Structures are given as structure tokens and as C-alpha cells.
Length: 257
Image 1: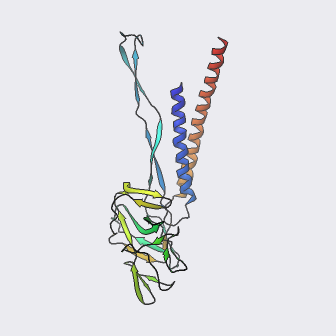
Image 2: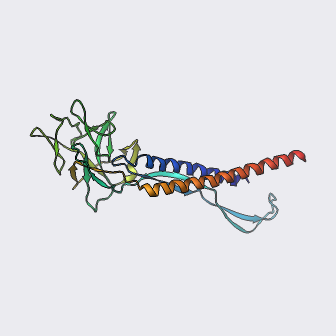
Image 3: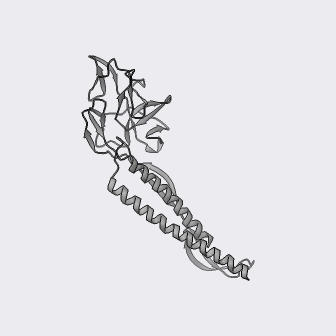
């Protein structure tokens, strides 16, 4: 009986984490460049049940296989989905869209310095601070292709298709961008990413100033998945409650005897 209780409770734990992932996707549906995450659910190894004569006896033998028994599921990992979101024209000079070739693999990202560490972001909504440094939406410093902070001589600038930043008639820097082919090396840090490995410069990318990539969250599908997950959580919750009542009755019977 307890095995079924543990199986239902484990499913509830996995479904709760799935709800958290979907809720985070839903909460960032208006965040530019946000990449929705998927929870990967896996099953524990199944157990093979066999019929045994005289259990516990040294002469006991297996008389036949009963079948397999599932031991539950768990949420193995969370994987971001790097498909391209819809593109919107904003007209803002600090909004930048990075267009990658159609046959490109992996993910292209902007380089950003956050708390002294080089991270990477897909959010192209930038800003110019009081010291005229180009900043990310989370306040990090946008880096050039040389890995340096980009400080402008003026708050007004233009960006060419190859990433060259020009302000007051002078070339300031080239916008830094990297191409991550092995997505397994990515570690999410807030809405940014840390790369555990190489981050080579992105090739053949084009930049468009005044455009922004929206979140790739499918609102209708996310809402439907959230409701499905909630109903599955409720179903497993009822199973746990049923096991709890059965255990309570068993204890009452034992006391009477």
C-alpha cells in the first residue's frame, strides 16, 4: 500500500515543479527575448514482480512472473526552448534584434557583464545609463566583441547590420554576440545564461536597430498545459488522501483486535 502512496506523492512533486515552470513562462510572456522552458519528466526504473512459493523459505522458488510495477516519475531537468519569438518594430534605438541564419543551430546571445561575471542574454531591450554605458534590461553592462563595456560619447547612437556602433560620427565598438551550439552547457541565471564551456563569436548574424524579439511563449498552449497539470495534481492528491484514509482504518482495526 505504501508503494502506491509514494508513487502518487512523487508524481505530485513532479507536477508541482511542472506548474512552477509553466507559471514562470506565463509570467514572462511580455519579457522581450524570453525563452520558455520545458520540464522533462522521466520514469523511475520499473520493478519486475514474480510469484514465489513459500516466501522466506530457503526452498522457495519462482513459479512465474507476475509483471512489471511502475515506481513513479520525477522531473529530471528543465530545458529552455530556443525557438525564435515574434519580431516587433518598436522604433526605439536601444531595442536590438539579432537575426541568425535559418540553418543555424543552438542559440545566439548578447554578451553581458553582470556582477563581475560574463553572462549571456537573448533580451535585446537595452538602455543607456547616466554615464552613457549601454546596459541590459537587468542592469548588466553590454559587452563589445572584445569583451569590454560599451561607453558612448552620446546617448544617441546608430547600429549597423554587422553590429558596428556609431555615435557622434565615430565608431565606438562592435556589439558582442556569441553562438552556443551545445545547449547542454548552458546554466540559467535569472533570465540570463552562464556557459560552462566555449562561447565562440556568432557568425553571419545581422542586427536590426529599433526591432525587438518577443518571448517565444505560446500563451494558449501554456494555459492549457497549466490546467492539465493542475488536474493531474488534483487526481494524485485524491489518491494520496484515499491511501491516508485506508491507513487510518487499518490502524483502527488493529486497535480493536
